[in-house]
Image 1 (cartoon, chains in turn brown, green):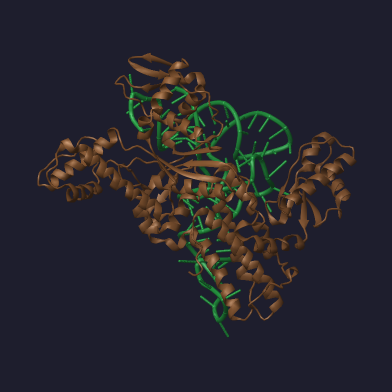
Image 2 (cartoon, rainbow, N blue to C red):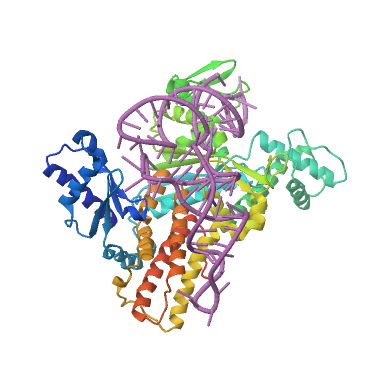
Amino acid sequence: MRNFEEQMLQTIQKMLTDTLAGLGWEPVPFMVERSRKSNFGHVSSNIALALAKNQKRRPQDIAEELKAALEGKIGGVEKIEILSPGFMNFFFLPAYFQEFIPRIRAQKADFQREGTGRGKKVQVEFVSANPTGPLTIGHGRQAVLGDAIARIFEWHGYDVTREYYFNDAGRQMRMLGLSVYARYRELLGETLEIPEGGYEGEYISEIAQHYMERYGKGRSEKDLDTFIDHASKEIFITIQDSLKRLGIVHDVYYNEKDLYSSGKIDSVLAELKEKGYTYEEGGAVWFKASEFGAEKDRVLVKNTGEPTYRLPDIAYHREKILRGFDLIVDIFGADHHATYPDVKAALSALGYDTSSIRVLLHQFVTLTQDGEKVKMSTRKANFVTLDELIDIAGPDVVRYFYIMRNMDSHLNFDIALAQKQTDENPVFYLQYAHARMCNILVHSSEKHIDSYEDADLSLLSEPEIIELIGIMAEFRDVMDLCLTSLEPMYMTNYLYRLATAFHKFYSVHRVVTEDIALSKARLQLIEAVKIILANGLRILGISAPEKM
RNA sequence: GCCCCGAUAGCUCAAUUGGAUAGAGCAACGGUCUUCUAAACCGUAGGCUACAGGUUCGAUUCCUGUUCGGGGUACCA
């Protein structure tokens, strides 16, 4: 059973359709939806505009005729107004809105939560950085985005697996080992150049120091594997710590090496060969990706005999499918844009249905310092780490900042701004609203209004209150939109609107006054708003402080 | 060359997936604390939605070009 907000839309839709039939008019597709602005009523329909062409009449006249046929016949609707080009705007009675309050107070965190994903397994893969250095501001975007999306799934009742895919072998790791080794030699008083393409960050020296404390001073380049192992483990711990500071913990860490050791790489390659989707050219093994919709054919195995990154990616995604997820979500940076069509093509070639895989690409984070762009590179270590950002702004601000805009657009991060003007940050606006509400509830008990269960909700009729409840009623729609779009930004925008409506109400109306009956009704309202705001903040992973 | 994103107020971004008079926050100017928290509220100013066409009752949104930014187009990940 859907919430009655939905029922209201359906009722109006049906009444309009029936009226159309009653008048013997040819049916046309039309919309019934929540109004954009309060002076357009609560629900609007474009039916008259849609009919204008067939009827060859002015939309306004059609609307008037429909209005006359419907006026007073829809329960809960106070009046119908017709505006400008011919929109029909339906205004609801206050009782319609007042009914939301007891529902919210009874259901609390489960308000309008129906569990559409119950019994379904979803995997969200995100961050997946190889352990070559601390997480950067760029990784942070993906981390927060992925976690917020996971929380959206959880709210809808999905069984969510947060997964991190990494590789601690290969060329990059060898460079890391050599870089640490160079610093290690340096600690022993020698001057040794960092290898070409090596890592130059401060953290490399620290790792070398720790390595020396554990393994002593007698190690040589022959022990490179121990350098790599030590460095990658240490870096991985710092990565996990950074994520933990943001409240992010992955359920599964999937190591690319396992795909090799378990023979899954070989079997994928063998199957593709067997099915005739590969060929050899220039000593390399190519995959006929172009036969499956990809741009061009790709190399799977180099002429050195070493697989490209594509092959393990394919094997990994086959594993994801075999593990029985109903939905697989991959979150990548825009630089990975070219790789996923090949993976999907290969899976199709192997006979798998790829429709359950959803790839989300987010654009880059541009860092600015005093209006100037900062170029960043992990290797050169001229980057700002995620940890430093959390030090500066705190986890709540960092999380909010990362998801407050569309993942398709570039995120412009001004360090100077994050550093100095924290009071201008919108996240405080939301949290302040929550703290204010908590304070009112505390204050009311001091005024000896211990129970307000017996409130008369018909006293809640001021426009600011109707507006506020109207926004609360949208919560479910926003959660649905978040689920279909996998774009948490819709929730941040929504909560901002909710907080605005609350702050406006607060500035106009006092909650706790000498009028006990009115106070009780408004206390119920405040409690309901607090519940919705806290629900939303929880989904974004942002704290809801009781005091500020 | 080809592919993917973006371009909206001085700046950073919205616009409920094609609706009505394109909205917020900063920054500028003016107003509001004897009250449950002024991290708030109210007002003024700010726009040829990059440009040119097209689709229709109606376009910031969809289509085709063009310009400018970012990313890709590896036998790097």
